[in-house]
Length: 173
Image 1 (cartoon, rainbow, N blue to C red):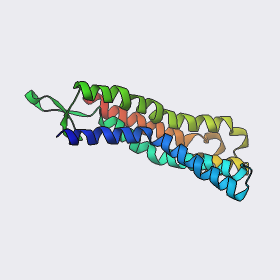
Image 2 (image 1 turned 120 degrees about the horizontal axis):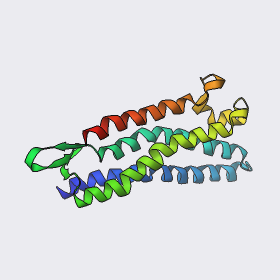
Image 3 (image 1 turned 180 degrees about the vertical axis):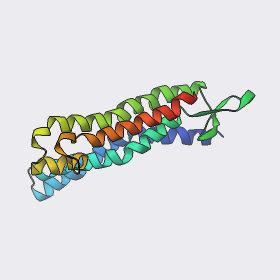
Image 4 (image 1 turned 90 degrees about the vertical axis):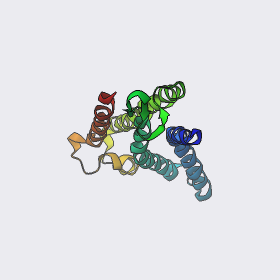
């Protein structure tokens, strides 16, 4: 049973550090590309940003799921509360509390809210140049398809999804 519980915590840990790993691997890849192609950083820099935006927005739902899973407990009567994703993990035991407050909660705050907030800040900072080719290459994924006056709408959609997850998970506690 202990190896089963370790799986839950391992998956949480991996999902929590995944954005850092992605950034590191992306930096290595585009750094090598810049050296080989003698790029002087222009294309590699643009592609580094684009790669990270795409990757972070792809892993964002998984990070949220793994983190919210730590707060989703079922009351099994006299047996106690157990994690929905793994009934071998007793909710709010010393170990579960440490992982939930030490890893899951910071992940929700840093990555769950931080990734879309970073996207919003990048768009707001570059809102005057949204039609420039360089800006479109870097950040176009976040605003292409939206009218100029609502360039930020993709991030509103992401915040709504996070809020919906909070509404679904936390009232059950």
